[in-house]
Length: 205
Image 1 (cartoon, rainbow, N blue to C red):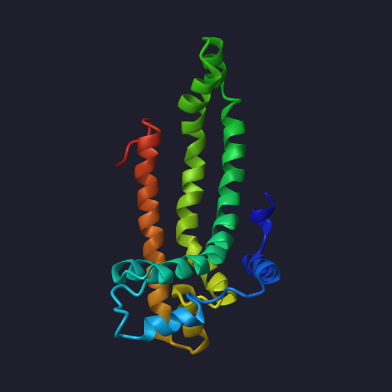
Image 2: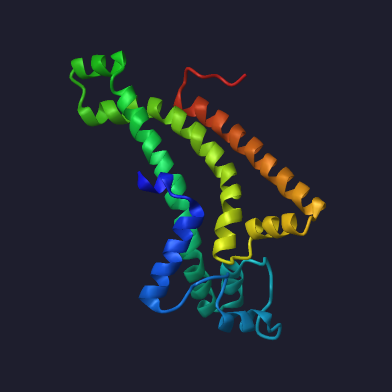
């Protein structure tokens, strides 16, 4: 689980270096300079959402869509590698603990197939701590975006928050903090609902 212990900025710099070695170019920003000239031309480009992947489909520009996806690969790789590695590690330890419980031993003693024991009994109980951490990771991902987007010069909410803090834009920093807090509240609400779905013994009150 090396990915779980890697700092996001270090992993981002390593990926940028490898990309430069393999392709001879550094892929940063939301789109390349050539595509940037296209999206700035209001005669051939209409901005609908501000998201290049969606706007390119609406405008019928497949070249912009491909370029935007290409620039998303490295930032998404950094974010998912670190977060998914932690979830996998927790799922493994939680599953190993669940397999030692008495109800698992009883299920095996009754002659149930190993796949049924794992899928129906062990996995559902092992998912409870995983869902808890995953819910916090979804909201906490915004803090990782600040570093990741800065490394890749990606103009997103993370870089906007970092620039706002540097420029002492109090209103923007408060807005970002409020938005992050709302994500934590919503993610915790979803986690609580999933608890009741996974474990029938848990009732929402």
